[in-house]
Length: 338
Image 1: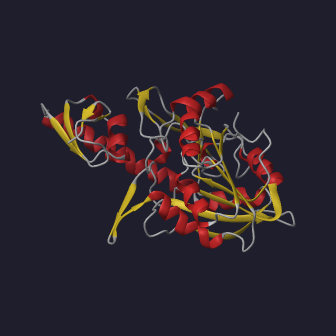
Image 2: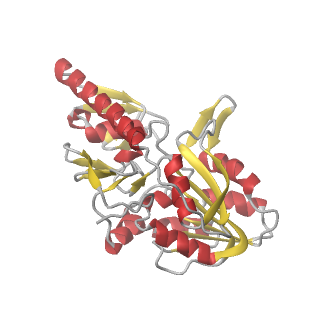
Image 3: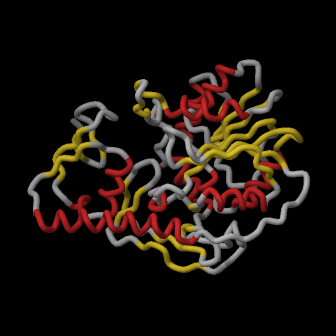
């Protein structure tokens, strides 16, 4: 049975159970399956009902996962100053909070190294290392001249020693967060820093529907998790002007044990679910009443994938998708791209 990383509670209740026969992964794949999420009654944390086995993790992240394995930037943000690569956004956000002095830098879950390469270019005199579960991503990173090893990190293995350890959208995938943080602390130098970025649920996030995201926290939830596990938060930011829905937490090892008051934020994530379920139902009703013979979709990103997975849109005759993330003539979810 799961233990809530915020309150140590084992009191869970059903939160969401899908009915479409499809599930969505965070790398925008749609596969057959059933999604089951549960809610901790005492904290409001949401989690996967069933834990992944080690074998399932090796298959998922070692072979199947496609995010940051395509030999290009994951995506670009379109801003008033033009489009900006995701890795550039994260680099500019994180770099000011590195220690004044450091020699070793480790990124866990570095993918093909888009972000790590930016740090390597900036800090060419430092020793940078990356770890990633994907065999393909690790090979692509090595071709860029980066020192990246293939390894699925879960917390029960030794983490290489480093002055800076960075995890970008990784910690929400970890089954045993306490074990993972203990491993990170053991690897961290005395004056080093651990930097986390992860989806937070304070602003209507939809990653509660991602099949491989084990945990779904508000910012307050995650702060409690960090403090309970002996980390001091030096800086946090949940209001990036471009990278919405992601929280940044810069930490160091805490000198003293902190007694963290137990808090509950049950309504926040439940309201997120209510919003998206209403949206799913509205679209299903619209499609039922109109009976379209052919449909074209404008935009093939995460939200389109979300609706294709959890509504009857995924059963409709979609003949075209208009998007600029793929070359015309290629397909996404079996739909021709224009």
